[in-house]
Length: 150
Image (cartoon, rainbow, N blue to C red; front, side, top):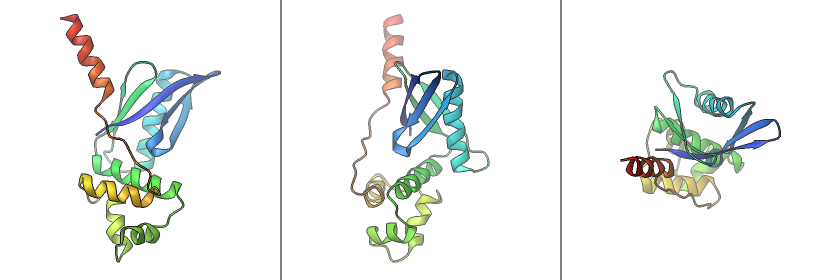
């Protein structure tokens, strides 16, 4: 699973963001900015062995993948909950769960939700905002390049 991001120049700095996580950082170079966003994810997840890969695309597009998908989904849920000012108890209540632990296990990355459950979890913590899943545009571009080179 990958998450889309954008890299662009603003004055002397390169800004990099991953909107689904409301993650943004900067660097003096493109390379430094991309390393900084990978570090942001590693710091936020804070698990031994967790690593992030930045897949660069064209025109400032990139994608982030990680060694632990459950941890990334957990971070996504946590960030969305926090951005919308919800406590664990409030998130659980929106889901109709009797205990905040029912929700927290997904946020902690100890359980991986099904696609249907992930949709319900995101709806509960993001105020009904929709998230768009799409195939990797970067992989499509690579395939096109390889096809035209052959």
